[in-house]
Length: 143
Image (cartoon, rainbow, N blue to C red; front, top):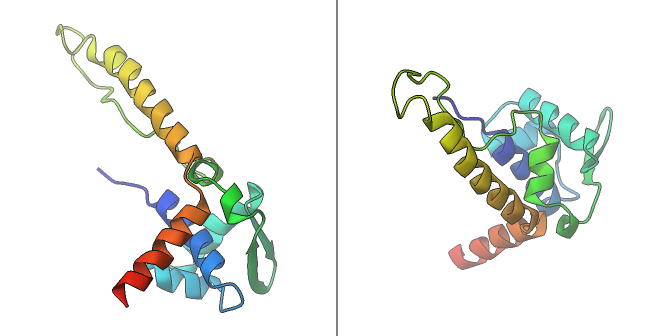
């Protein structure tokens, strides 16, 4: 099973921009921090810009947050990125002739919906400022 790291990388980009304001904010510098390539960073930055979370100027490596870090939630970032927005997935190929196989999809769908609603609500309460502060506090502890 393949996992998408787009959410993690998009939060990484915004946090990097928040922490390193006034430094090298080129897609190459951010990509080096993520361990990715600059085109991935540019694509995610485009998604963040379209969603109103980031302001960029073509040809200039000077991105800035479009909102205060306190006003950008993890849910905002999650919705901003171009990906399938389903946290949990149900196997679509179960046996319809089996008691469990014929009912598991609908049953899990109900429970998974409850879990996703709770997760989205929690994501709405975690801000980019929380992420940035946690990183900076962890840095102070390790020094």
